[in-house]
Length: 336
Ligand code: ACO
Image (cartoon, rainbow, N blue to C red; front, side, top):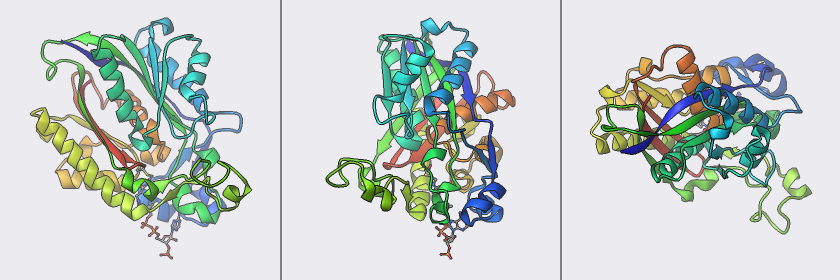
């Protein structure tokens, strides 16, 4: 049976570290508040001359190298971001040019914090269809250039970091998808009636006569707005439910899963999901303490760190789950 598997993983975060103490100087917050509410200790933010496709490039080159492939063997790019280099064209096109891989399709997807789970699922389906062999799947974000770093923005701005992660998903043939290395299954969801609980209103065609103007800037519509409590409750409920559904559908018990690589929005969300599901905390690999929330990049950055730390090893059964703006949410099951 033709399916796909992850053959290489890479990640990249900028070198400039901003601790919670650095943020105390900018936005009337405290290390204690941030750690207690979110688990975050620090995040990395880019220098002015770095953009999303620069971070994506570094992560992609590592993933391709670790897959043991030549760049020229990549036949598609799927890139998830909510902080693109420019409104258009898609950041995948800029990445493609930087990789010097002309003419292969480059597909940008949004789906916010669930972007990487969607991207892996889309890549798997292209590969299963027989149309592609090696797809570069990337999650990359530069949030720091879009944050309100004044006290007014503190509830949102303390949460986010910059970074990128990438995997190569390659075609493979397996007899038993439950026992061999492969991407087993995924579940994808969205519910747009909650779109405005976590969103960035501008620039956009729905905000008035012009998609961007001084009024938009004056009102701060270009900064993310979030109803944190609603997001928290839905994140726990939706991530738990879609993990449960995916396991049931594939006849897998939670005990069979060796490692959980969840989206990193908030340490408390992941602890609560583990508590509700009865998952031992040591099976959940968290990185938010070091990087903050890097949205579409959290899962592949976590994969790469887990490999480097010896926590993610060949043959392990892994489950990912993510929740984010949209609302969107999803889960994925794969044998590493
Ligand atoms: N530093 C210090 N004080 C702050 C800060 C800050 N950075 N931000 C808010 N406060 C204050 C508020 O002003 C408020 O003060 P008040 O009681 O005097 O009015 C108090 O702290 C509590 O504010 P709340 O907004 O009620 O804080 P809450 O306990 O809900 O925590 C948080 C906020 C951490 C965002 C929480 O709602 C949460 O975890 N939500 C989940 C959403 C999330 O994690 N989103 C991440 C991005 S989305 C994603 O990736 C899915």
